[in-house]
Image (cartoon, rainbow, N blue to C red; front, side, top):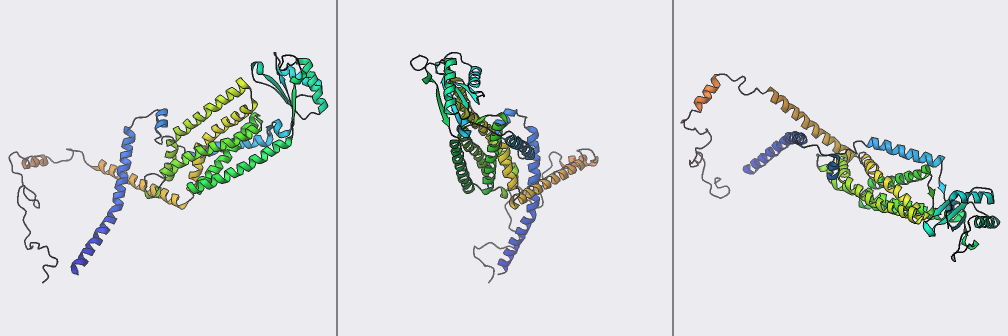
Length: 446
């Protein structure tokens, strides 16, 4: 009974000693870690911009400067909203209704000549005159507000008299001039269906991200998509691009790209921050910044691979075929890809970090990291002061000390073992008063 109590007391004393030694050990680890990191940072060479970008070692500070990116993003959104409110959009004929007249170009017909004929025939200017295609297949397209049957017939006669378009048999024919009317209700139907599809898409995306990741990532991803839509619409309003049904389709397409690029970064953030509260090496913000650096090259490569076919589509649509639908689709995709790449790096992840830093878990962990680094810095400063107070070798040593040391270490003198240390090769001696172990418990209690 007495031995069991003694063993318990010894275990308790050892546990208390270990707990008392844990804080100095942590401080020592922090000091050594800070010293080693400083030494490694001083020893490592400075790499080039491309090398740091490729390796993704966290050299680019994005999260630490998120106020700057918030300001840049806020200015971009403000310009987009002001342009939408003041300038509005340039809607195509599919949204506001009108009449389209087209005929083969034939020779060297110019858009200015067609506009003059239209003005002389109807007394007003057309909304647009474009030449679609190249070579023998080129056609002239005239878009205007809705025309009556009499106005359409008058315009067709004027165009035939001025340009003599040829039919399929190679002879001039009025049948080569075609016209079509588009009601504005068709554009309204497209808009309503696009809004319904957008709402369903946002609901499904938010549910998926909340189940797969967390609600803060879902909020950040949805806010980023709203940012992409607003900025893309602002670019169309500011530059004056025409909004067509292909533009609406392109807007829905870039939402998928923006979400894809954002989820790539979020997945790396989740990987880096998994169990972050159990370590004090980096804060949550620093882990998220490392994730951005690690996905920099992937985001850039994804954007470049996506932009190249879009540019090829624009070249084919504008210079080779002259198809306006392909041009509108490629244009909105190009703008959306550029905006989505920016937002996934400089807006989505900083917003996620800002939302997570409002939670008590991240705040307490950040304070723990700060305390650990502060303790390491103080211990390092104390070690530096101690090193400064230590006298240099041979500075204040008395003259007798070297002589005594030389006498003690004279050659040929036998080496004396320490008092508590047995001589080399000596047999172990059992302490006096101790008994040989018998292998039985409580052998001495009889």
